[in-house]
Image (tube, rainbow, N blue to C red):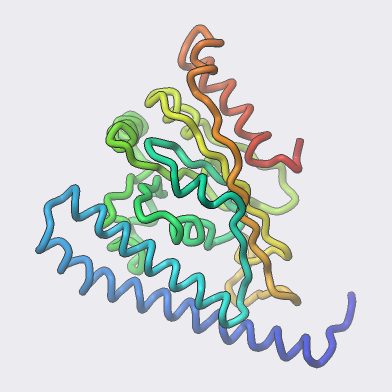
Length: 259
């Protein structure tokens, strides 16, 4: 193992402190949004307008948070082809999930973004107020989930889904659940693929927040081409077969280095 120089050790110590500060900021910000900002929005707007205003507020808050992390030297990041993502309407967005803040990074660039979230998130005291106010969709009842996703997409919204269902485990071959493919086939909307690379790894499922790497992590968020759903429906005899074939293709599209 390579020994770190004194400046490198000092930098790592600073990043541990700064990471703690950023997580505290996130928690405090979530409480302020949940108990002050969102109730005011609720009082002043109707439901559909409320969800859009809440999501726009989330985007601005997350953008500030991400910029703060970069300013403090906790992380650095770059989006490629961001304009294409920001221009998307009535589209399913799928991405790999290597770190805890993938959702925050992507949502920080989208004033409107519905999200499919794990049911357990609705019991998190710092997050449940946000996901409820934003109208996010809990991942529980399969049929109800498909209906809710289809409704949002037919309204012209974009919907973010992490098809793995949880954060990627390093050194283990990822396996996608079929939910994203089924949503796309049922709703007949195209899929925007995002591939996220984190070097070195940071905030993985196996790491605690204070286990920062020796060097500052760099997030590369690549906005890739859309997948056309009409072609899968035309080439397959049933929606079930189309979803199965689409899911296979999604694996290679989301994880190009594993092909």
